[in-house]
Image 1 (cartoon, rainbow, N blue to C red):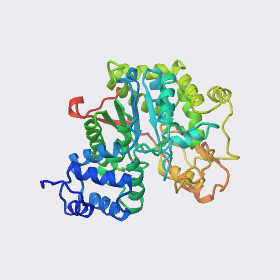
Image 2: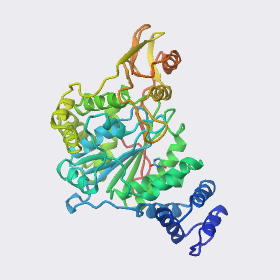
Image 3: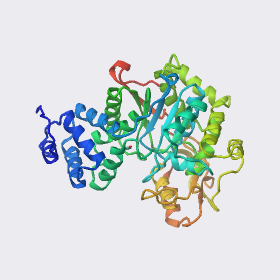
Image 4: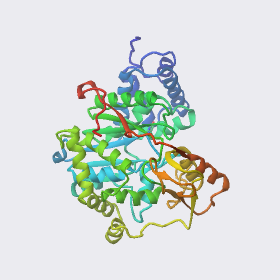
Length: 458
Ligand code: URA
């Protein structure tokens, strides 16, 4: 391994990484501070990112990069009585992934503090902020002081990233996006964990998805990312674990922003689909165990299921909506199941072309069709139609007869085309038997947490 001397010259630092040498903590600090203060040219940032993408970084370099990025802006501070209780989860993105809307209030109902900083959807996966913004009045912009107040009174908030939280990531991410350097393990890890570090978390669970609807199609890629994230997170002082979860079929029965809010409320009443409740309780049990609110994973699972059944998680969700700008009446009506959200003007059902058992519903074509119908965006800040979505009338494992309606598509403008209907029909796989098995197939922890293992009770 090559040793590094401190440098204050950007071309020399870029040259070292280009030539596969390790950068010192000082060199990484100099680079990140230059990005934040805008004293480094964009061409130099692009060159450095490409050098990292091609030559990689050691774990130590990645940890130094993460620390510097975290400290590039505001680091949230919490009152003493939150000590040990501040938790969050991060997902690498899925189809129908509404887990945050349920998990944050469920954890708050269990006594945790959840300052969840989420993102918007980009590409085929949905974003938590878009789902919440389909609720009239919901405000994703909250200052650190407002977040602190909401955590004191409610216990959870779900907000967008502010300009002064990890500004280095904002700049680096924008340049990665246009320089083909997004898919770099050290850059992904530094980007995700720096933002979680700035939340001053005690515990973090990462939901790393694999399968056709995920960033990683195969488990080994997801496992490598998960282990990397867990190591970097723990090094930063956050107790971090990762769940590897299958992302083949849509999660739950609804995909699309406002439909997913409605399904989340059902789950918050203890009446959600089995796969969604399983994912929420698995991720929640790990966080409750890590922050010592549960003696075991089994106890953690029970605690999450209990707050979903007894209405206390729903009460937290309702209180969070009000704290973030929704009127008391609207929040109450929504949580009572009244029609508060705008419905798409048109709905169309497709019928099964054969009978048998639903083996799979491919999530990627479903997401891509919804994207074309206006549920997602191609450019940041592009407007979307919150009411566009699908409801699965049949799901994996269900018996189905030829002619049974199996999907209801909600759309407006553009209309649903023949080609899109055909793509959706092809996403339904009918056979003799469905594949059974848990959504979370592996938990990744550091050695001190007990190492790798299957840790969600069936
Ligand atoms: N999410 C992030 O915040 N950063 C990445 O680099 C990838 C996913």
